[in-house]
Amino acid sequence: VHVLGHRLGRVDMRELRTHIGHVDPRLRVEASLTLFETVLTGMTNTPDLVPRWSPSEFEESRARMLIESLGVEHRSDSRWFTLSQGERGRALIARALLPSPALLLLDEPATGLDLAAREQLLTALDNSRADHASLASILVTHHLEEIPASTTHAVLIRDGRIIADGLVDDVI
Image (tube, rainbow, N blue to C red):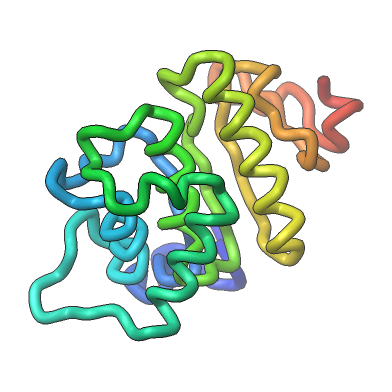
């Protein structure tokens, strides 16, 4: 398997991870962190703030810009445990985008969201795609209604085998 031009098994995974943003709604985040602090953890690739590490002014500015672009700036200072699932999902997208990855992996990002929150998340993904046109992304979902409008290609997998792949409209 090759990822971003590197062969797995022959690449330093710590280095490769710096080029991959990952959104997983099941990520365990320290409950006392604020939304802003959680987004900053994207720079360290950890779910917690790293001792003796502090973000640069550029990183803080970029975090604020991403938080605003995803529509959760009004919750920046709110503790993680007080955020709704939808706000957490959008914060995790900002976290994944913070280090400017080449690849964004979204592992069932709409898990646990109600209809309104799911629509907000999908809109945020589409807007993010427009703002980061060169970013490749892979979204895993079991629900067709969770496929963002900006999706171009799809792969349908059943029992571990590819059933169909190609342009999203053809696969669906």
